[in-house]
Amino acid sequence: MNDTLAEKLQTLPSLPGVYLFKDAQGTVLYVGKAVSLRARVRSYFHKSAEHSLKTRRLVEKVADLEWIVTDTELEALVLECNLIKRYRPPYNIRLRDDKNYPFLCLTTSEPFPRLMLARRVKNDGNRYFGPYSGSRPVYQTIHLLNRLFPLVTCGEAFTGEPVRKPCLYYHLGRCPAPCAGLADKERYRETVREVELFLNGKHDKLLKSLYQQMEAAAERLEFERAAALRDQIRAVEQVMSQQKVVSTEMIDQDVLAYAADEQRALVQMFFIRGGKLIGQQHFFLEGVSGEDQRAALQEFLKQYYDQAQDVPSEIILPAQVEEAQIIEQWLRQKRGKRVQLLAPQRGSKKKLLEMALTNAELALEQARQQWLQKKAQQEAVLVALQQALGLDSPPRRIEAYDISNIQGTAPVGVMVVLKEGKPSKGDYRRFRIKYHPETPNDFAMMKEVVTRRLREAQQGNPKFAELPQLMLIDGGKGQLNAALEAMREVGMQVPAIGLAKRFEEIYLPGHSEPLILPKDSPALHLLQAVRDEAHRFALEYHRKLRIRRATSSVLDEIPGIGPKRKQALLKHFGSVKRLREASVEEIAEVPSIPRSLAQTIYTELHKEEQAWSE
Image (tube, rainbow, N blue to C red):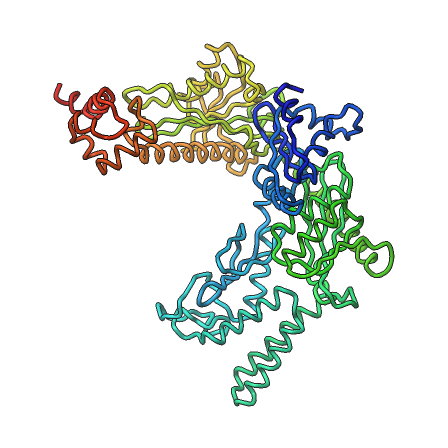
């Protein structure tokens, strides 16, 4: 333990809050909450403490500590959820990459709401449902709802004013055509309320509403409307017939089951609304190594329901969690009604858990088989690439290099990495080219990037320590030779090839003629994929630098001008153009700008004019 950490442990308050463990580089390793920060955090560093292997490894890496005091434990829980989502610490149990868990959005803030996929919940007046385990279930639900209810199907927003002719969906009775000004706004709003009832699992209420509308339409002699409602009722009843009645209590419940093996862990969820099983999903977890079922379920509860828009009255668990009371309090606050966490030992709820566990184990086995199949395919591609290029072994680590510039402006280079055939984005690296010739020279720039990468490895930089089994250079002979020359100067040899985009020709060191692989070759597809990824990454970095350069001020380049002085100058003169037209005396009139600095500003702003006159 270093002195800084030891000192901070002495000053910890005995108050509720959140603590963040950091390593020597300042990376957040773990986020936790505590009723008493002093007692909880200090317990990690007691010599007599019996920690799991995972916790011991965490403690060994902790070099710094930060904490945030809250008024209550409930506030600490909410803050903990937000910080885990923000930092995704490696030693916390986490929902696997929550960016992949989308929501179904019903745009109720618009005159004619539509259904769409959303990646995050916003406070924008719309209704959100989810999260879903992937985009496919969202689109399947949208397709089903568009079949059951006459909503806008083209995905566009309309005000109800006619802007074009109605499409085929209008003539099929699938869309009321607000684009053509033909939609009845009140009737459309009624349809939206029905969609909300369906998504909330209130199917009985929905059917009651549809029956009432059908009878009213028949009494008004609107037989076409009544027939359409009759068909809609039948479609909803057909969906309901496929849903299994699993509870006689007729309440809303979520049932959670946990399954794990050596490599992965997941939580299986059953969604029961009004006693009927209306859906199921499973969510994979990360960081569960060395953790028991209770800890995994507890972290899942906090992270899932932090995002979820629908909280049931009962959440059934295979085992009770340590923080059950505070989580119930938090969920009650979200729902506005009582929420119970139950761990039944017998009866119908126990049978629901057993059914969920069976599904969890099946989902885990399916994931394992898919992983094994994918791994075998990746291995076959790497072996095929080894054979095609004459390498000594399959290239487990492939690095691809690309250069991006516009006529020499803001030149950059990048390195992207594939490990076992998959992108390893944590190993991607970006380089600002230091070599600025009068005319662009891609060969010299490529040489610089490869030289700098290998020098970093020689000097023991851990970010560059692992060398590749294959370097892929974007370009032909010239770019490849530049990379080989860099290797000779550094004194390191790494297998390298060049891939020219026009004809997908592969250039090998010492070969005058390029290698042409069949267009359907998996090995070629892998090389193309990593080359294209390098090109995308380079363009993204180059565009970012161009934008930064375009939005920066010439004042940023003048010594002695910081943000405050820059703001004072622009406020006084209104623009850089007017500042350039000012004399030294006029510049010196600005508060905080001494005459010597005013002279420097004047000189720097007129450098281009002086160079032109000379």
